[in-house]
Image 1 (cartoon, rainbow, N blue to C red):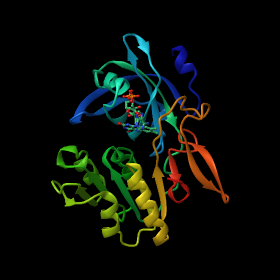
Image 2: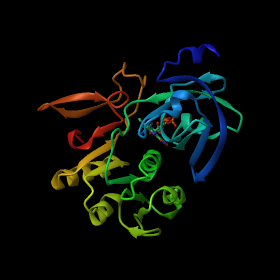
Image 3: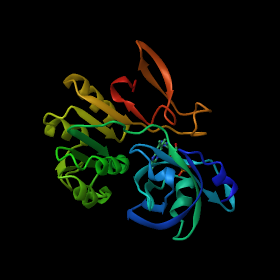
Image 4: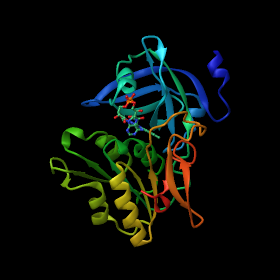
Length: 264
Ligand SMILES: Cc1cc2nc3c(=O)[nH]c(=O)nc-3n(C[C@H](O)[C@H](O)[C@H](O)COP(=O)(O)OP(=O)(O)OC[C@H]3O[C@@H](n4cnc5c(N)ncnc54)[C@H](O)[C@@H]3O)c2cc1C
């Protein structure tokens, strides 16, 4: 055990993990599979890990990535190259070792009954983990929205765990034409819980819709993060709480929030 692994707690792993595989699944977007740990294998859907990239032998600030799947064997992460951190991760190879901390934050917890999931773009990634956890409920459905067919990924994986998978694209090149929020309005049939991850405008639109229809909604939010442990307050969002507005931390109270309480 190295010194970092000694910092691991019962619930959070901190140490080196080995890259099992890395693959570009659509242009600029990678599926990274790393070895698991006892703590990581117990992750909730919606929780995230902090990956610490090393560039020219120097570490840079950790980068948060949602857990797309986790079990005792491996943890899967799906990321899009945005800047230097994710570019560095895209250059990893099988057998490389990377620093990982997690699982962090609060995910989708105690979600039961017929649930409709809605993922926009990269937002589909954490919903795969949730879909797997909910797959025994035949009434669980998912709407996946992408810009176009070249941006769509993991369709077969979703179809292997859920019976009802609805695809839409902005240009109609795959599935029906339109965005995920519009598709949810079209196909919803009695579900009382919505779980969504994607761009802010989509989450706002779905939260407004859920409010009108008396549906519970949980949304996974993203903010630029500093420490990832709740100390730096760099990732706060405004939340309604007990008749007041307050700031809550995406890394600690989130990233999954009650969508009806988020001030978008
Ligand atoms: C809880 C959480 C979970 C996330 N899960 C995923 C995931 O599963 N897959 C994935 O691809 N990305 C995910 N992200 C976003 C990812 O962390 C950022 O894209 C990444 O940190 C960018 O690092 P970089 O060094 O490549 O880019 P940087 O050089 O740091 O920035 C490049 C560009 O990306 C923008 N950017 C950086 N971080 C964010 C952010 N958090 N939100 C929006 N824009 C940002 C910057 O403003 C800049 O324009 C998540 C973010 C959070 C907060």
